[in-house]
Length: 240
Image (cartoon, rainbow, N blue to C red; front, side, top):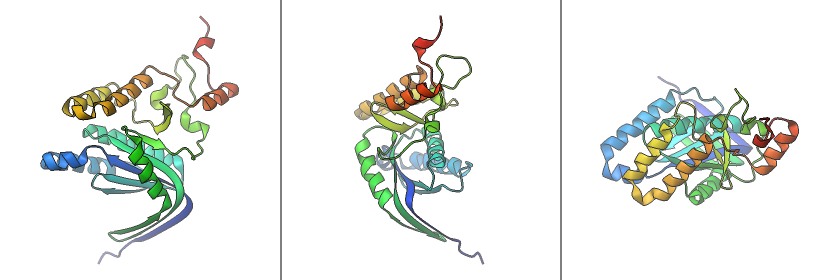
């Protein structure tokens, strides 16, 4: 007989993300079989990922809840989620919040009491674009922005950054070097299939263009601080 495994965690300072798969309900109602297959593929790929043991993940239909006592592992997990979601023509919207959180897993049962989750759901509903944003009251270490030297050879570009700052939002970078320009092509195809949501896809395409044009996608105070540290070099400061 298999013994139930009981896991309990509680924290006054837990990071919790609530993510929603955009357009999922409509796809389920109109194309159940193909949507089910895509969802199962997402779930299977996700379960094969080497995600930090500190990250807890729960998927309920189009709702995905992630929690972690530390921010960097949670961001990495959400970037993996973006990677596999785009493969299945899914885009996600969500929010990351820091706050009081308690959860207990007993066998097949999961119990959650979370102030952070309630706040994350409220913020997610206000995001309005395919992005997972970071709540304004979360303190972010400079390392999560990456250290960029433009246009010196061999130094990372925004595509490798964990976080991006775009149109007054701090958000988790949905792109990576493996996707390349195909992420934009996928967004254009989705826009053609769902013209009623054109504005959302245009926002995503504008973000993609900014990333691949290597724009400086970090808050002004962060870039000023990194300039002072010598970790960032302005484009116009380069010789020649």
